[in-house]
Amino acid sequence: DAGVIQSPRHEVTEMGQEVTLRCKPISGHNSLFWYRQTMMRGLELLIYFNNNVPIDDSGMPEDRFSAKMPNASFSTLKIQPSEPRDSAVYFCASTPVGGMNTGELFFGEGSRLTVL
Amino acid sequence: AQSVTQPDIHITVSEGASLELRCNYSYGATPYLFWYVQSPGQGLQLLLKYFSGDTLVQGIKGFEAEFKRSQSSFNLRKPSVHWSDAAEYFCAVGGANNLFFGTGTRLTVIP
Image 1 (cartoon, each protein chain N blue to C red):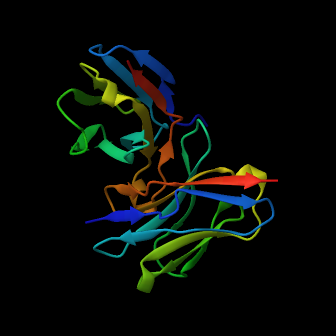
Image 2: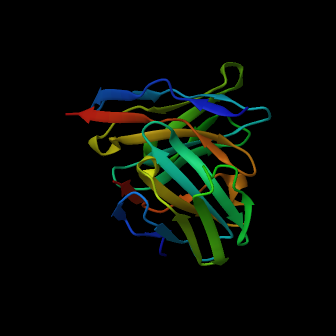
């Protein structure tokens, strides 16, 4: 079975540019999470969806960040405009029905973003 | 407030030696506790989890962890470390809607 698929794996962009990160969760999983990982702050939950509906976006740092999940097999995380402090590895994770109660999040390999 | 503390940022052990990674948590209710491992350039993989019952839980790759409520700890152990265990290890605590991760412990294994 294919795991969580993220693209791009690496993105280098200039400050002010729009960045779109993509995620395809595991088929049949109904919850999707976006995490950001930095040396300074570790792993932070940005937003999560349940059945394509955003449930908690309190971790989204500011209005420059937005996330969508138009269907069960696709989600995007957009940063517009990007800033150097957004440089991080962004992880997408999914989990099946009731998955958070089992604690097993299935992570993608991450998208490493560098904003110059 | 929920939080997880991993006091050791970096640990180095010799191959074949025993390992213990420390984790302390703060959680308002009965915690669900987890250990994840992250290899370089990879996402996180679940090693083991504790929900209830036996406080000593077994995981993949020969790891185990013990939940000690009185100490608010969930330390990860392995009796004999292999070179392939070199990675970053994350403790996490959570409930229905979120997992709170510690800052991780990087494990280096020397021959």
